[in-house]
Image 1 (spheres, rainbow, N blue to C red):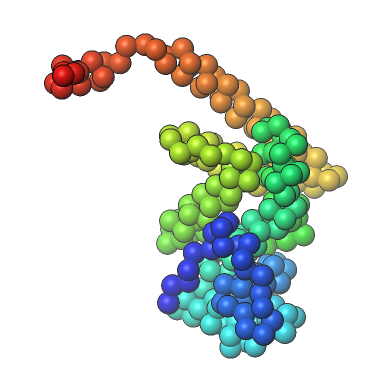
Image 2: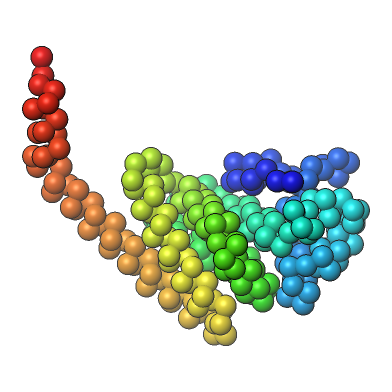
Length: 237
């Protein structure tokens, strides 16, 4: 049984109807409660049962929402939690708020919002990353990471469709992953060490983007060997 993927587009429509919620709606409702229990019980059936009880959800339906090929799927629970974090991040930083910021500040604010949301569940996050690091889960881990950085760039207003779309997300994925590693062991007040680390890494992104833009501008009108060869093969009529 395969669940439909949760995306930034359908998260906004995932406000549950108490009378007849869909499984996707239930996953988003239950996921934060599962994370709160995962610090003690792991991403397990016990954590799901506690979350279902706390949210007043029928345990059989909760089990169905997170069923995998071999019983309860920890990866599916983690997937739903990350999706719920994406949704809360978007709520914390609506378009008018982000529009008033420069791009650097938008990215920093979005990453910090995610960390703020997960701060109370750092042990659950640590356990989740351990599960995702298992060889059989690496492909899914890559998808979830890409989904989160794509959500951040889209909320930041990025509309690139060329190779910049991929380079921006790949760079942010590295920055976000490194920042989470620092965050997991950061006991400084207000996670100041994590924020400082993030600031330095985002400075690096901005320098790279500036250098890339300058390079592209310098080479914009240079002769292109591939274009020249193409003209030899297909001369203008």
